[in-house]
Amino acid sequence: MFYLKKFNSRRKLAEKHIVSEYIFYLCRNNSSILTQLLLFIMINETIDKEPTASPRLDISAETESYLKTSAKWGFFLAVMGYIFIFILVVIGIVLFVLSTIQHEYSDFQNLPFHFPFVMVGIMYLIMATLYFFPSFNLMKFGDKIKFAFENNDQAALDEGLKNLKRLFMFFGILTIVTISAYIIAIPTMIILNISQTLVH
Image (tube, rainbow, N blue to C red; front, top):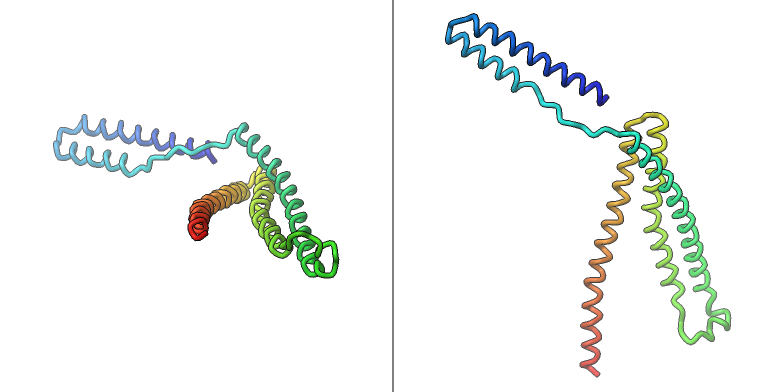
């Protein structure tokens, strides 16, 4: 496709050159000022109406190798992410179960503090949910990129890169939310500590 567009661009330039030479010949052999003026306007309109082809990036063999390697590592990280999600979900469920039976066992009652099983279980499930989105996008990225180069499928390549974009967007939004939470939490904690110190 890239070489075809390049050939069409060169063909259009050649056609422009031929038209220019022909009109120049007519102008040189025709003494009428009006005819020369009309021909001059025609050649300018012909050249201006031709769209200029913008240069497009080409996927070289080196770029293809980088994408294939990235797809393999992305698939590996996605599998590890799903395993980690499974572990987090199991831990969360175990903590929920322990929260229902902690009053029946003396070992839990002898603890110097009340362990918040439910709260910690909810945190583990939230972490598992957050890990799902990057793992899913990495898996889709790896699958689509591999399929694209094996079958020469441009749509699959676009879809794979779209999933990579979603991965970066997720981490970007998560980073912004985390920084915003710290910006709000740190001054709030300082103000609460100062207020408690003044009260006492």
